[in-house]
Image (tube, rainbow, N blue to C red; front, side):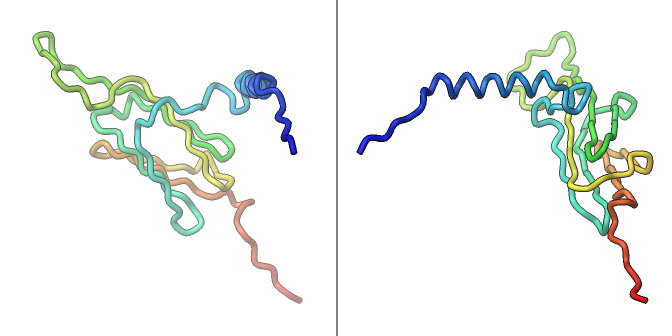
Length: 141
């Protein structure tokens, strides 16, 4: 019994075309892909709504941009670390640079009602579920 495999180069070519089409589609508008793993984000459900906790130590809140669309939230900013002119860096473990994170939640959200609080390098986003997405009680007559 012989097993015949399709051409592996054709499979790679098909994958490349699919990836190119995905990138060209602008599926979320204005590039919402994550760049790196900073900042770390935890998301949990509290009642009907969601809460996102974002660690942003050393970042001024005026440098943060937060956008919401459909069921996604985009957080952008820049973290800089100043060592001074005469400093000689021997170990660099703290992350710095531009970041762009997008988080998706499995519900429809109310972007106008999202509340953001920033204190001591921690951003808390309170993300309410859209009224149209909440279950309704039906009275039996």
